[in-house]
Length: 581
Image (cartoon, rainbow, N blue to C red; front, side, top):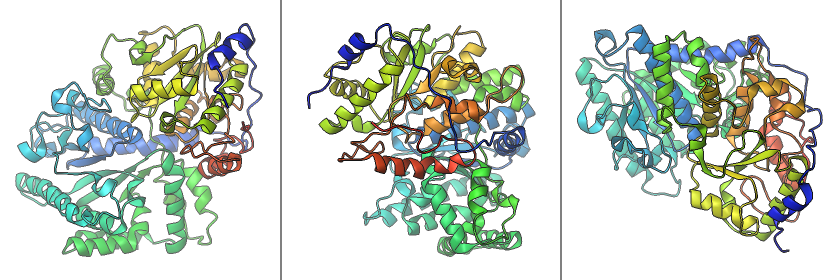
């Protein structure tokens, strides 16, 4: 089948057509996010920031090459650091001289010394870390975000280990030596055995070789004050959740006293192997106690509803309190943490500079192709990596989807904003779109720089308007969601449901505080996804891009796997809400 001329179709059929307003949105229940739930979710993240700002021991942050996790870790590091400075908890105070925040990053992110961030991901660590590398230069008098990495220290172990790799355990010994070196430095500097806080990606424990991860935990848990698990994003509420629930079914509830006994035994273990065995046998018991493990994976009510169906009725509400929503909108932190104006401004500027945004810049600096029309509303189109590979069946299905989209959202009234995965290059993005649409970019195409999480761009947009740098929102005006459906300023479009930014952006909208102080709520946040802008493909998988004769059922099943659990708490549409094309 010949590629359709998307540009021609839009021009000839839809110029002058009116907007087809989405119908009233339906969800799986009438459950609303109320103030009590919001308070719970807010406090989980807030209390952790407070804990770290008062910490007298080092905290180590493990960063994998996942933008959502890096964004969370950056917020946590910078907010804790800002609050600590406001309290006077710095290295000048003897009591806090070792309360360092150490970010360990993979080699492809290790570009901070240039302070221009030339790496693929454009994260500018150089804006707020010490120039010293703790492994080569020792402990610096910075008390803040020491970056640790060198080429031989491969964080693909234990993050992305290949089980078929016979050298895995041999390479892992190098990791052991590295961390033992860090531990030794702090022991010698402090004159005592030092414990640490550790931040992980919650997906990691479920994807690496069990033996290696148990050994890794056997290495760090004897030194752990507390383990914090940050969300990987989409994987957290599907794959990680399933694994966690299954472990509960297998292991059941463990009393708090028994949990403490297990934790103490880890700290008294005589070797890494002994600690690894203790962890392997008791990992679900440990992960269930928020005194030892703090999770930021999902809404507590979501996990509560899952666990409440289990036969073991010894579960208590405390079991679920560790599941809290991370607060991604840094523009609320001044109020949330009672920051002074100077402290907040420094905190906010560091976040922006981390993503290479500098004072005085406009939102248009994040546009790589096209021009915003501030008088138009917006369609935000997540673009998966598989579009870079030609496939006629898939390409024709994509064209059919966009031909349907423009019927409801004509180009004279909507900006078409494409946001690709951070690992895609600009050349791949443009060539992928051109190839699908008859070797040309469709009219009104706007391509954002792909190196930034969409969440950051959304909150930056909000911040620039709040501070009168911009006069209008460029993507999503949160206040418009409190109005009628046809007033909504921006929606997601296309077919890519398997991106973390869908739920994280809806989450931010649901918890957005309107001028009258009310939360926007999930009923309004769900307007971000319309069945006139998002469709389930019939000829290819929306996750992975594999083609087939009838892929609708496959896509519907995967949609259920990822999102059906949110229906019961009013945070997603019914599974039959989205149409197939």
